[in-house]
Length: 336
Image (cartoon, rainbow, N blue to C red; front, side, top):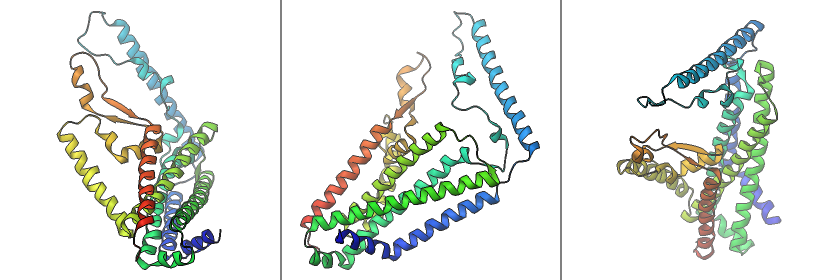
């Protein structure tokens, strides 16, 4: 317990961590101030006009669906000269989302509509925060010799490294939870006072909570990855260099090579695709190669799905492998 307390004090005392927290607060403040400055409470005339426009848009969708059904009924059974889309895709009842008055209120912040994009921004910042703090936390100690001094007091390498990692993950988790509550509460107040709260039903909170939970997992994984790579490279810059090299060599160069050789489903080989699929609960990608065998035989969408369980498994395997390698190397490495 004394070791964890000592590591927590060391972590909170680092200037880089303090700087990142200042930047976190500054980013939140700028985002909130910009949102409040660009929003206003809609007047009664604006609300009535928006309701009429939304109703007109829904009626237009119903007319389009009815016209599609009529064309299909009038079509000759032997007529194959034209492809007719499935009218069910145009049915307003089957749409994920229908036009609402908030869509026709420019300059009005709607919390229910904007909460998810704002939460994605928060998660992205926290992922960067966790990765950089995790890398600098162990990297600075390995470079300065702080780990050696700590081992003189507690001469158990794996225990010390595990305490550092556990302290890092616990501190990042607490900070992410507090930041999330303060962040969403701030924009909820903005929606109540300088905009619209929107439809805040059980489905909304359930969906937002799912995104938040997946985001917290991603933040912890990023923190562990930064910690592990810096441990393997014995320096903070090793983690930064590894991420930069991966982005340039594989995400950019590798993707280009896969497109040149016409590889099938190249996005499933990219870590960014798995991150997006996990965070959003699944992702669809387009691949024209999936339709090469269907030429002249019918319609082919050319889309394939990457599910969140697969994405989570990839992220866990990557993080677990790097962490295990870091512990194995740290156990036998000469630290002087």
